[in-house]
Length: 248
Image 1 (cartoon, helix red, strand yellow):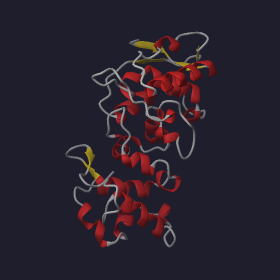
Image 2: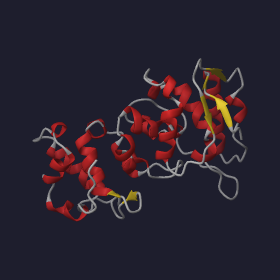
Image 3: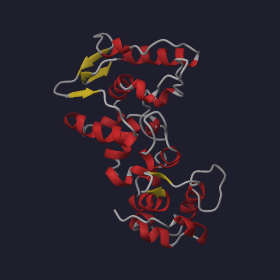
Image 4: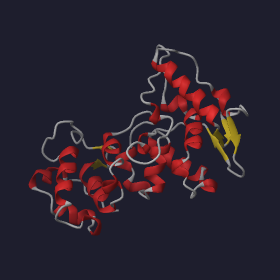
């Protein structure tokens, strides 16, 4: 594993070589990540004045987003969230964290979009590295409001990220995200409250919140409302989730 590198971008050749590796993993291969692609001049190229990245142990995706927000400061602001070649290169650089091997040396990469970004809706947020940066920086959620999305380890996407970041009317509405954070984030554990993500639409859970907000959006201007105001119009089934309220 390379400990530090100047930031580069994959070429099309590099992306396809990385994609082939992901396919091999899904077929059962246990070969080591092709880190040589990171500096191979056929597979990647330098970015003028881009800075460097180093291997750090990220406990959460928020840690990764916080670090990359600083590391990429010199190249941000030019549609960086859509740069397939950059985020794919970074994904390989941090591959041992975004796709760690199990005790038998096998890795489970999942869909390519977790490692080779598919920009925009509905899959851009699914990229384990780029999606975290997207929530933290591009959508402007910052340190506090990103927590409910990015509290998981680097290789795991939370259900909050999966269900909300891919819905434009949710992720771009600060009041809705404030309401989500106040209802479902537990500051004592720095995780989602227990039971908030059950897949059935149990009263007051994440999936019911999505349903109810979509209904309320027909009659209320939710973009003009704060998190407190949105919570105040939720039905009684959400009352039990209102403890540990946070003010951002």
